[in-house]
Amino acid sequence: MKKILFATNNQNKVKELRETLAKMGFELLTNRDLDNPPEVVENGRTFEDNAVLKAHALATYSNLPTIADDSGLMVDKLNGQPGVRSARYAGDHNDARNNAKLLAELGGVPTEKRTATFYSTIVVSYPGKFDQDLIVTGSTDGVITTIPQGENEFGYDPLFYIPEKKKTYAEMTVAEKNEISHRGKALKQITALLPGWLESVE
Ligand code: IMP
Image (cartoon, rainbow, N blue to C red; front, side):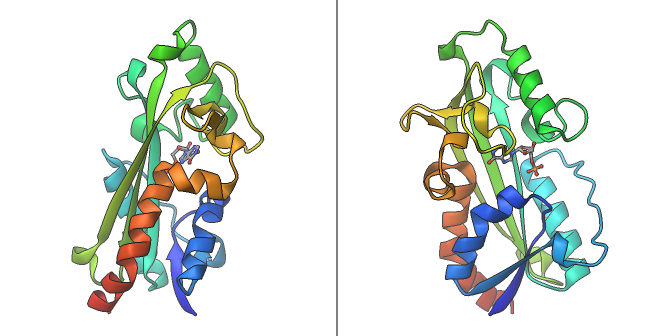
């Protein structure tokens, strides 16, 4: 099996990618499989900037083809916040505090004005070929609930409601979420493009 690195410590993201990559014949390694991987400061202005920072740093360190995802929630009523600051919206990276802050900021805002979009940019980099990065994006529209709904505790999932499915992301299985989610849509493009891209850079 060919090895590919997913430049993340986030096991929820890993769950969403592992099966798809395995079906394509890849063994998915993550930062946990590396000794002392570099901490990447995510100080880019866009999701793409941050995904590129992670993919380049970890591809250089591991010498493996490397996938990185940067994602975030843009809430219309908050002029697109938290956006690229989604992870540290409430200060440090704490999902419960981020969710509490989001609900507080939207206090009293009626359902029809609680619209938001989740974005994902996935970058795949090949060591030494950083001018040929594969870059795809995905986005999904939803509505921010007034109370958390669902068991899955990944980030903003309990607050992100998909009207067509009548469920929050946190009420979906991984497969259901991948069907319609921002990251799932980006992942579908990766599935289509990765084999050809690898052949061209190797
Ligand atoms: P990053 O892409 O790892 O920088 O994460 C950005 C922030 O958005 C973190 O707080 C994540 O928990 C959150 N986030 C990213 N993707 C998702 C998702 O699919 N569901 C819920 N929260 C997410």
